[in-house]
Image (tube, rainbow, N blue to C red):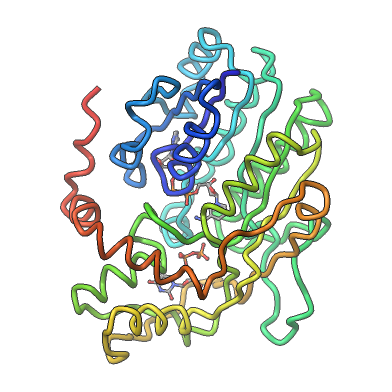
Length: 334
Ligand code: NAD
Ligand code: TYD
């Protein structure tokens, strides 16, 4: 079987490849990535020498390039991780989010239909469901929760998901969709809350907390997310959507304080800064469908493994240094 994984130089896609390339030595994996600022070729190091892995630098919005690749490779499965993924960037520059997240998804689906791909999977986010109130812990996002997006990022991901649903119904694209909550783990670009806090704290710089730090996210280890995606590929039913959550709701201030304590740094580093416009209050996922129908369960408990994730960044200072200096952009010479 031949599998296309897009966005494999990013955080979640690279962790996915580390998992599946080793787990399925009989399958061939091709990764395409445009190597945007968020794509780091070094993230592929653990799989680069594997005989069942290959990297091709390609933008998912490049219709002709994508069509040519599909015609040559004849993929059985396509898993789309590629996206512009940072909410703050989407507020500054929404256009690239529409282009990559919506139009790129369309390009991949058109190629999948034309070249008889047996399964297309769209990796999406819980942010398409909007947010939940802080004072109603009983409310969780289910697969039936209507889309109610707040940021250009979530709107572009929701737009892409709606397009996937339309391609399934109108053109019979054999597809599935997953909505996951906030991921943590190794290789996350240091623009996101957890690696950004670790990186700044290690350098004794002020750590920005938006607003009062009350906003709640449901944190899942990237490994558990990727096991869920793999189970959807193998056990999931075409046409279905699955939610994957961490069952670990924490507000941002708690996350930041946890990191500072683990690093032995003072809480004086915390700096409350102007809130993000349209800032979603709370995300929380009901994963019972994936648990019931796929037998998915989480291996990692947030409080037990957050220290391991913090240690990963402490032990990979060169990885962060390369990103901060811009050196990582020279990693791919192909
Ligand atoms: P990321 O920003 O770390 O990685 C994105 C990758 O996509 C990068 O390697 C980048 O170079 C590549 N890319 C961007 N535009 C491209 C294009 N036009 N063509 C080809 N490649 C392109 O993102 P991530 O955190 O790994 O997220 C991966 C997916 O998971 C995204 O679809 C995101 O919406 C979704 N998701 C993320 C989270 C999270 O907590 N990070 C949670 C739920 C869902
Ligand atoms: P982020 O990691 O950007 O993920 P998302 O916005 O997709 O949930 O942010 C997580 C939360 O942390 C979000 O409520 C915004 C907040 N935040 C901060 O308070 N400070 C920061 O420096 C960052 C990057 C985020």
